Image (cartoon, rainbow over all chains, first blue to last red; front, side, top):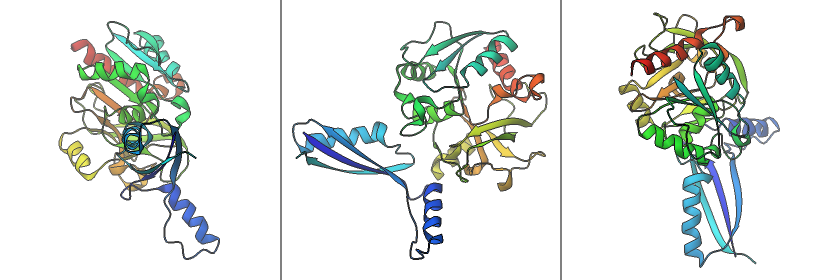
Length: 83
Length: 232
């Protein structure tokens, strides 16, 4: 059993209105050091597979097809053996 | 003419579209469930209605795109079929790759439900050929994710190929930042596919198609589609 941890965020070129609003709130709270904030999604998959490479290949396809919209989002993930 | 109107869990404008097409315009309509893998035979146009298909989970339209019926719609569109996505339907069509770009959260973060003005960029499309000289329409929007975006290359292509059909404007038809309700790139409210037979638009013409509702501008679009189909 493997665990894939996936992060999906809007591409840097795409405006993130939620991120802007949240970073504005942090600044209002006094965290003046906050320069910017990008809001994204975190997904955790438990899945079977032959080895890490095979699982990574499948997860990459899942990201491309469904979990991220590559027109506006980018994704990164890690795959580990489940403990 | 025969219209297929798709129904997903969470669709909520399906019956409004059915009402306009069936009761107001006296056309044949058939509701098609998302699990159906085939469209009814003899369909002239598929309407992908508004709503919150699959609760907008993951992204608007992302899950609907993989429903059995959307595979049939993609086939239908590939063969030159006429497909009309409204609001969530537009989101589904972009997710499905039938239209370029994507619709993201409104710039204001608010769900916006109000009448807007649309500049009709071309009066020779399948959906805008019976406007009687009208180039500014008043049609309501109701969405939280209608902020159209695409890459600069795609935008340039849309412009060059005259595929931007509707842009948000003011009452006089001026396309200005102030008239842009949701932050959409280039004030884009609706675009066509390469062959001009697939339309995606955020505003809801089905909510503006009867005098009793105080607005019939939307009906002009349905009548245009009927006209185009009857000439084909």
